[in-house]
Amino acid sequence: MHHRLTDRDRLTDMLLLTKGVASSYHSAALEAATPTIRSNMVDLHNKELESAEQLFTAMEKRGWYRPEPAGPST
Image (cartoon, rainbow, N blue to C red; front, side, top):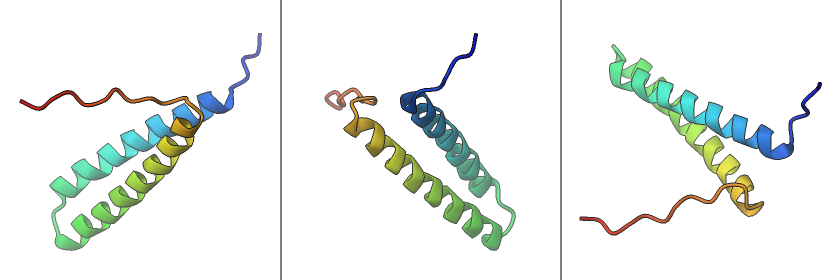
């Protein structure tokens, strides 16, 4: 039996992958041995954040991603 991915499945997969890549770049920036490497990792991290925002917005507009509202801070 073949399972066809829906647009929602694809966007969800892309968002999860983007979050993971952003996390890896974040860790790499923290561990970077030189300012140049750190700067490169930060730039890549920021590009992933932009991609994640675009994916989030696309999903939210379709009603496929509804984050829980933040509770009161203590």
